[in-house]
Image (tube, rainbow, N blue to C red; front, side, top):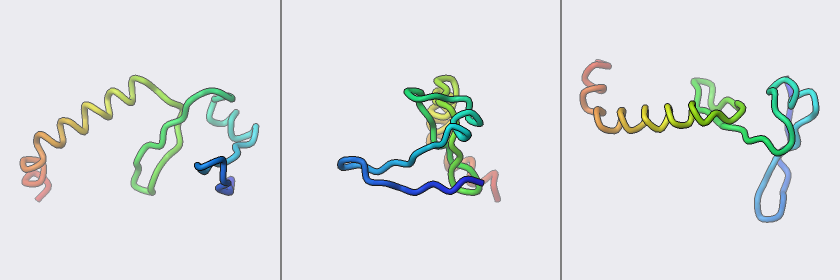
Length: 74
């Protein structure tokens, strides 16, 4: 497990990722990351345009069929 400290960067906040973490994620400086909701909170993943599009479509579907999904969940 890695512990990260949130630091002030201008008017924003950020964390510093070690080389070990970057290697484990398969990313490097300049790449984009995604925060993906999970049962434990959020997961950090390398950005995937395909996943971003799929998540957007899933959210639209869930918004459109929310009442039916609630009934099915009972």
